[in-house]
Image (cartoon, rainbow, N blue to C red; front, side):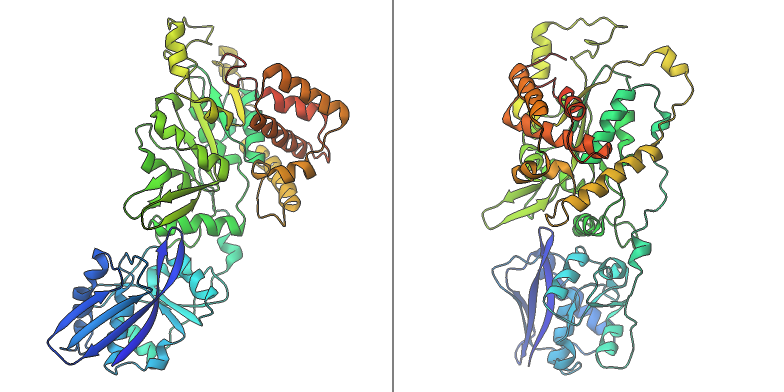
Amino acid sequence: MLAKVLSSVVIGIDAFLVEVEVDIVPGLPNFTTVGLPETAVKESKERVKAAVKNSGYTFPDDRITVNLAPAHIKKAGTGFDLPIALGILCAIGTIAHKALADFMFLGELSLDGRIKPVFGCLSMAIAAKDAGYKGIVVPYHNRKEASVIKGIQVYAVQNLAQVVEFLRGEQCIPVENPDLDVLMQDPPDPVEDFVEVKGQEHVKRAMEIAAAGGHNLLMIGPPGAGKTMLARRMRSILPPMTFAEAIETTKVYSIVGMLKGERALITRRQFRAPHHTISDAGLIGGGAMPRPGEVSLAHNGVLFLDELPEYKKHVLEVLRQPLEDHCVTISRAATSITFPASFMLVAAMNPCPCGYATDTNHSCHCTYPQIQRYRSKISGPLMDRIDMHVEVPSVSYKDLASLPPSGDSLAIHRRVTRARQVQSKRFIRDRIYCNAQMSNHHLRTHCKLAPQTSAMLEAAVDKLGLSARAFFRILKMARTVADLDQANNIGAAHLAEAIQYRTLDRGTADF
């Protein structure tokens, strides 16, 4: 009596097919699970036994062996409960073998037979589609996230008896068929608006450029200047997500169980602001079974680090790889897992320990060694990876008492979206979404300079002592400024504006 049921396991953000083999032979009652199962998988035997009996079916008093193949991949989670139960029922003849052949099954079983949701259902639906299976049977609460994948039929079930009756042809379960156009409509969200920010017009302009091109941004200024207030409004001007970006982001939130309610897709760019006490594993991910960190939860969105020098230095240094490669690779003895981490870094810091080195209204009592020690917490290589450095001065009474400015978030959002649309057409065949993700090949193609403009950049590089990385980031920013201007070529004005955002490079200027 042998039965085979298809299921899946998530490693990183991708799912891999797992064949659940159930063999029942006469002998003393015993239930053994093999195939590198974790603790939660081993414990499934008790849940499966109770669920089968409480659903009105016979549980065999024989020797049961469950093999999860391939055996070299670790199996974690509770999603194997349902396929194991179906394999047992198939092996004793309750379900026909042919009925299981076209479907993938996943779900956690309660003792009374109810099917609970599992993590990573979206990735598993993609794996089932890629493998050519007819459909996937998922817990009812996972139905919306699984059904966004076209090309595979999604059946949502609530209990074990319902699945058995469906497989025996005694009950019809409707196929989930959501309207993707409705799902992709950005829901109204009471986000903060830039119209609430008094003064700081040059900072708003820098943030507009950063949002339009996906560039990293560092704001430097005294306490109370509005750095945090400005950063939290970045989300209100970001362009809408494409369907591909929404799928990538939702996969990350699905595997960590952070999809709220029965939400099918994350269509709004995320804003993550971890506290400065966070560990390196919390920031980039890790653990015995590696899980995504804050940089991956901010994928296609914004990672905001307030009071940047207060973070532990080794925590900041682990940001180098994701800032450069837009992904995080976590290596363990048994495996190596890669999580996506294409995010905009927005950071804020004071110019000195007391915060008032650049404030004309307050006196700074920090000594030069104290200031140098404070600034040295941010290494040169990390600073080099931040595209834009912007000084945020204290706000004058005149600005505070003035009427609200005309530049609200909606107007900025429209300009940013228009620039991103230009970039989408430019990179339609390259699987990148913004100027900040351009490679050297793209720079040679899309960032050509006229001789006079090239001479201006050469003079800036020589005078400021810019690194090669800073040189390329200036070209990317200039391309973004030109896109906001709706210009086909990078002009001198576009390049000059981009250069001014690199004048705070380490070793070239004080701040």
